[in-house]
Amino acid sequence: MGKPVFRCMGKKHSPRFLATVEQSRAVIQECDIDQFSAMLSDGEDIVVIDVREWHEYDAGCFEGALHLSKGVIERDIEKHPISEDARIVLYCGGGFRSAIAAESLTRMGYTNVYSLWGGWRSLVAVGLASSNQ
Image (tube, rainbow, N blue to C red; front, side):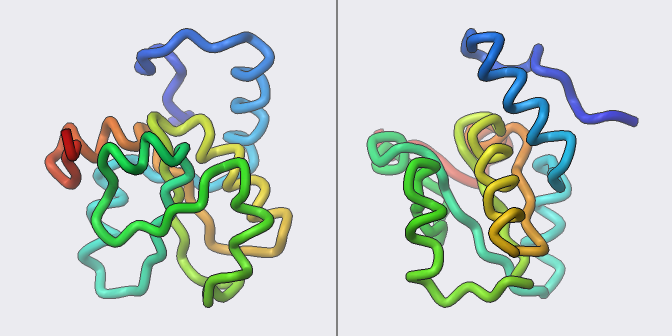
């Protein structure tokens, strides 16, 4: 079974952006909301990083998530005590920006990085997070 296609996302994105996302998705690990939920309860350590912009994060986030927006994650991740083999799950609004960020962290040497397909919307949909508004 292949990775989910873009039809489920709510925004209209440019073709070049979608092509970039697809290239990233082809080389990274992804998890869906059910797999993420299982990770949360498997007893193993997990680092959850919200890669959305500040205003999105401020409006609501997954409890305990570290905020490193896609624009600064490469610059700032080493300011945090995260080992290269830590299990890291990135999320954004739906899974596009987090896929690009996951590819970047993988290139930096992080070996256990996942992008949450469905992102914030999936977290809210299953009750793992809610908006502050």
